[in-house]
Length: 345
Ligand SMILES: Cc1ncc(C[n+]2csc(CCOP(=O)(O)OP(=O)(O)O)c2C)c(N)n1
Ligand SMILES: [Mg+2]
Image (tube, rainbow, N blue to C red):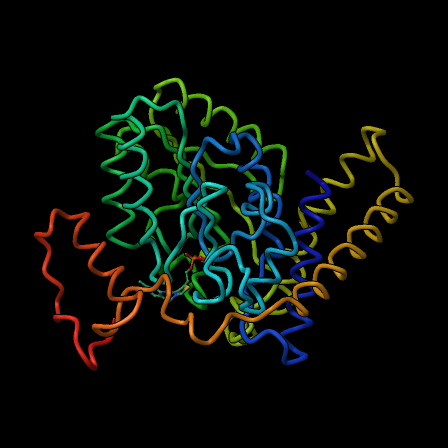
């Protein structure tokens, strides 16, 4: 767990550096969220369970099986980027192989998808569990309430995780909700809501393990609110000095989940400063090597740009995919605009 947290942190530092060097056009920082992401994902079964992360969830994807190489193939928009082959924005994670459902940019759109997937699991009697992660801002969206309500009615095998970092870009919690805890809302949907310290990786693991076991054994959903903080601006395009004081950020960094976990491991006599430094050097070397490898990896071929995206015109693979999409709805759906020259997807 400690190694994975460190990998996420060092990937974050590297991607920010690359952004400032002009090599990475857009990055989404994870620093500060490593404890809640890695602790909450740890109890899931890889190859069986389904993950619906949001853009800040590099740590979740690392636990689900992505590698530092995968992260940077995405950052550079390379051909072998597992999420979309360089078609999506970076940090829009997805992998059919790893059971990570691709996310889209509008906030909370993964919530109804997650509820629908969990409903399908239940109908098919599959013992799999769905995990769905989102920020505090997402909980103001209609989609969020609809998805959670549906999961409560049907007692779905799902765990909902709120990474509450007190801000939705510049909007503070006080302008987002009139209740103290997001977790309180679970009661309205008929299931348990739990608040945990999101900087305590083992506390997050513990709450998550209980919820995942409950979901797997037919006990229905749980909402886990993990209180945490993001150390960097919202994205590489944001300037957080316009809405957060430096004192507030520095204060939050005292509860850095990696330092807290390191201290715990030392107190337990499981490691010491020397070993931690050695590990940091080792992981840093690995991350740097993966950055180099991803940077040198092939770019997507320009002529493949329209593959795997819904069609623009009557020609090429894109149009075939659009036809396929209509077939899956029994041919009853009508595109808003008939595909033709000039129609945009
Ligand atoms: C429906 C919608 N509204 C607004 C946005 C712009 N937007 C992108 S990220 C974001 C903040 C979301 O905050 P939160 O859910 O708390 O997650 P955090 O970024 O803090 O981890 C907003 C408002 C969007 N992408 N989609
Ligand atoms: Mg937030």
